[in-house]
Length: 326
Image (cartoon, rainbow, N blue to C red; front, side, top):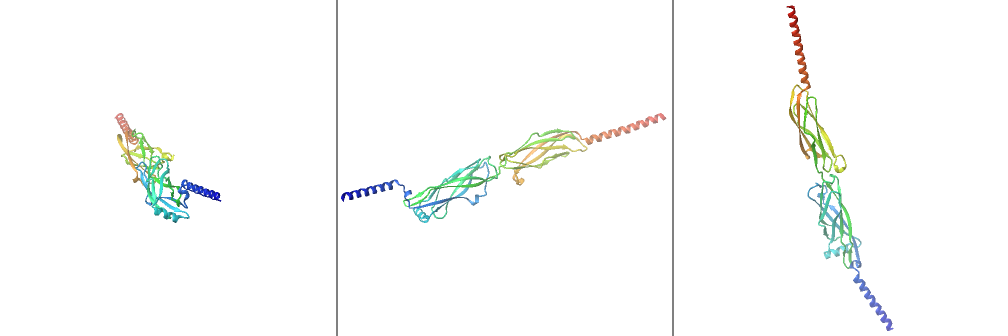
């Protein structure tokens, strides 16, 4: 009988030791009785939703709100436990994906949020910068990763959670262009036309309108140029260059030509569909030298000479006949 008692006692001692070993080597997180999950959210500050970001400028600070909510069957007990202990939820924030031509970071990269059955929030900021290689006026998405650490005690536990969200931002219109006259001086005679080639290049990030206007048209010359041209952005894969012509020709009036005149052309580049006052203006100057006389005056002089010749012919013929009679 005593042997049996000793055997039972030994078994009990071994069981106690085994239980202690299991308790020692088993984390508290596995031993928790009340387990809950959580939700994460990311919201843009209402004042920053429609803000455009100018490429090549300093990083723009976009305010964001990070939300944390405990869910599950034991949410009230679990939330109250960690709240009473003063243990917040720790959320790590990072940028997971960005579009080409963009750099982005989050500050701060870690926030602490009070644990609760309702949504609680912490503030952070997304710092965004665009270079010239991002298409303008087209929304782009930045993917953000949120990682909430596990919260645990001997009885309560809130599971670790990883979630993702996207923030949509808008690159602004970047006006960059070239207007290059291929020649600025021409010499013409009456009846001829001077053609000046002007090369346009849209180097910006969106569709651009070029508007043309003659500022100075000298007397005696006619000036013709197209009123406007629309060029696609090179980033869109469309045609971003075009060559136009300025035509200058003299009027057919009764005057002689032997001078130089300057023609001034205004070129205003603007965002496509935007008013011209929002654009940038360049003034181009072209010189035309006219020489000779107009066709009309040459014809008039020729007619006058013929007329005088006819009068003289009749005069001498009349004198000749009179002398014969005498």
